[in-house]
Length: 116
Length: 335
Image (cartoon, rainbow over all chains, first blue to last red; front, side, top):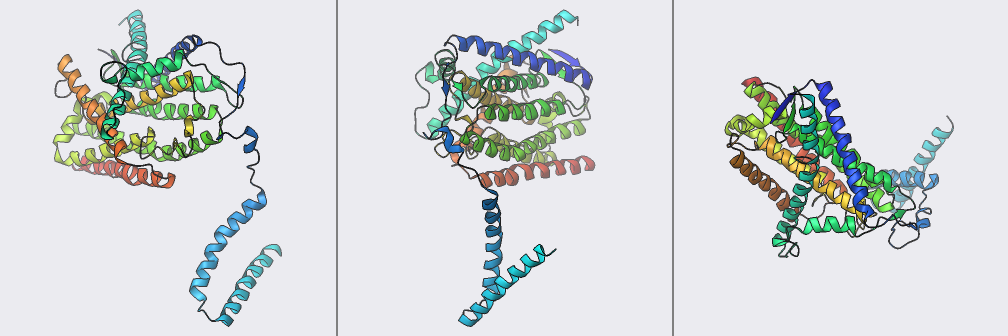
């Protein structure tokens, strides 16, 4: 076994050239072996999307509005549930007061935000 | 040594042993071992048609994909790019073998473990990710996002775990070159005998095994492939020679990572380091134990969800590896 005690810079250069050489050889083997099977098909093959045409992916376009409401609902639901569980005692009048307070709070936040 | 001998030794090491040819044979054999063992644990036959006990089946599959099947022409992807990145990944795996003490020509210097991390971690992972994304498909993109989420924790975990024996062997033995793979392989067995250093070694070995499982997309971390759910995930668009290249890259990754565990954690040829035949036999025996452990984990679990996979890698691989590293630093300061 030959031990090469190199400095880090030379070792990196040496090993990088080994990487390129082995990758190039592998590429050559790949091309030579796969050529036996015939040339690459001249017809384009569509991506496999569960049997659907490729344009089905185009319709998956999330609008800015959907993103906004997704986040607001996701975060808002947790706040709403927390407040309801903490504050609401089951009496109908209280429920009305609670809802008005909650919506009022949201309106206040919205007003504060937009009036800046 | 004169330049001509150096060049011929380098070419021999790159192309024959332990380079591309040996890498191919060992990778195919490793695939057969995993497939056969997995099949037996599930009361199936496994590969059995080509060669005795089906040992030549992976070779036959590989050659069939290369020689018989044609390469499709993708409308929304680049076959050439996928080929280039696949070959670069295999090149990186071949190169990392030069840092292990099994090559006729061995590179060694202080802190050479960093180069092992660079070639085995960075190059292979990036090549795999770019190879997958070269052939675009919604399933592939989903698989790649899952794979990169897992890799973000599995790669640091694997290399933190690898640094533990390298650090301990270097500091406890006090031999040169420091933080070198060669020094580690020669002195790692002593770390298992010492009860103080055996604890971080055990933690690091478990962490490394789990991170290998996730890097290779083996159960329970087969989330990026997620057969049925994502069709074939990252490999949905691969067929013919490209599929053969993808399988080779995956098997070669399995071979090299298991070999790193065998050498860096289990001491390779020890206790027959001086004897070529016995040393090789014990190396193969230890390698098969590592491969069996990986297969047993693979056969024992069902597929995790993405967040389960990520949290498992963090809990059982990254954190134990970090604890092992902190333990090692404390032990070295005590010694």
